[in-house]
Length: 239
Image 1 (cartoon, helix red, strand yellow):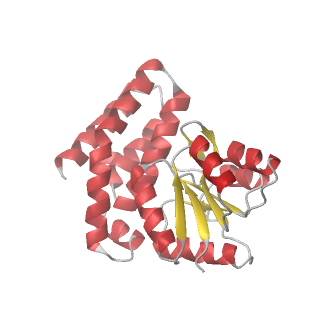
Image 2 (image 1 turned 30 degrees about the vertical axis):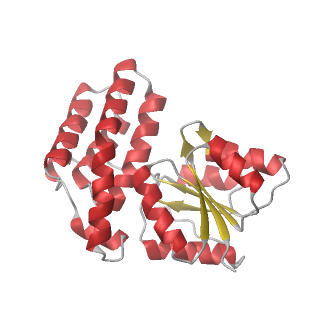
Image 3 (image 1 turned 180 degrees about the horizontal axis):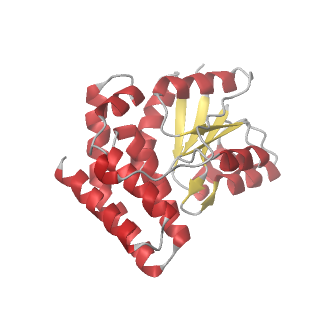
């Protein structure tokens, strides 16, 4: 019998990619886009594995895991995050996750980590750097097709489908970033940028990703915000 897995992910682009990769195990997948939805599904069904996003609209993955553990649930759990900073991954492991994965990553790397966890042989912690140095977004291509194809096992059709979903969500994401920046709400700004960057990686939106990194590093900078908005427009115009 195929394992039943809970996938917790709120970003539509990342969710579509991770759902397809998880179902390919093969597995039966329950989807949740928030702490509340995940809590309800985790307590209703017996899962072989939980795949929990570190940052969710109504809380954190660590808070969700703590609550589920307090309810006596012992399902193995992997945290996934767009961050590649060692400190964040270490904090997730300290919170009780069995392993962590950094998004984006190729579908094969994702399924390999899930198979290891399901076999109770440990997971995979994927951390690239201590931090990220902002890159001039203007020097980056709007689309990095090689990166997108690598993430999606060379399937150009899947790249096109995910990219269409990404583009459809981008205006709302742009507005959320602009609103958070105007309010000086750094927490909301970083949360939105975090979700966006995972999607950028899966579809190869290189210029927008670089602009998002710069804005995250300088949230009060008008120039960084304008650079981000310009990168959004470049991305929309090229679709």
